[in-house]
Length: 182
Image (cartoon, rainbow, N blue to C red; front, top):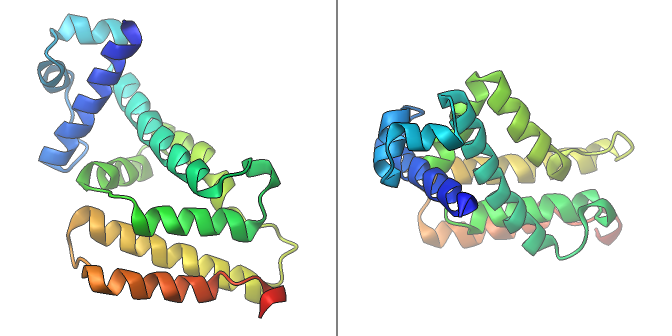
């Protein structure tokens, strides 16, 4: 039961971010959105910081699940190309919105939130120093292209038309080719 209430609170907090667009969640607003009293919410999340940490973790859970589904193998056994490919495919294919963007943007300005996000997502995008520079550059370019697309889609600022998304996938496919297959 407590797990369901926590999920209800976290989903409600994300909905507030979708509506309001920024990191402006208050405990009062989150409680109201979840249909709880403020003390009822505070039983699960005693501070705004605790709530925001849980929201970041909740979003990171979603990202990691999407990434694992794309990778279809344990992260530890995946090559850098496979990990970046999964990341790019999720960023170019999954529906993201203002709540996702707000979480990323807010995390950038608050160390505890940044640490949570980095700990969860960094293993997917970190490249080994042993990769040749040209390979590192191609994989990084593919990731940055995906990050830019995801940001544009989530914010609706300069959105990319759907017809161009398929072309972006083709460009990233070329960037993601393993050096041995070139």
